[in-house]
Image 1 (cartoon, rainbow, N blue to C red):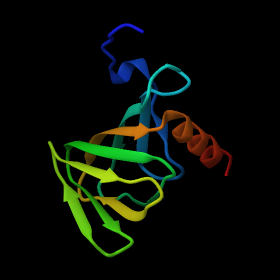
Image 2 (image 1 turned 90 degrees about the vertical axis):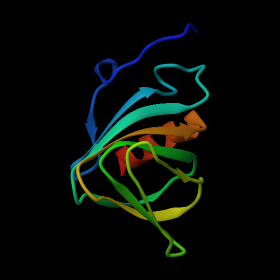
Image 3 (image 1 turned 135 degrees about the horizontal axis):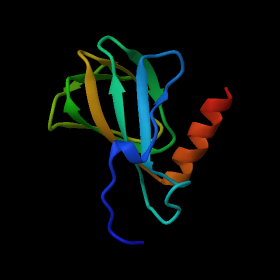
Length: 123
């Protein structure tokens, strides 16, 4: 595989359920089978929230706005532009956008991410 520049125009935005949360996987098991991670962009409208629990590790890198995660242990972490939140696989958390928010997400391993997304779409 060669070094590449990838933009949001190279993927497509998809809504997450009935939320005003949109994701755009740019590197994933389907588009780049040799990649060792999934990478994409997310946009969330202010006030959008969801409970998140993943079987894979994920890092959320905030590029605009503010995003808060409350851990199952009650700790509240808020990240703004230039900050990241690490979500270890298997943890359960509540999360919400404090304002209109944009972020980059990185998930690993990519095949577990793909299985989780496929199962969620069928639910």
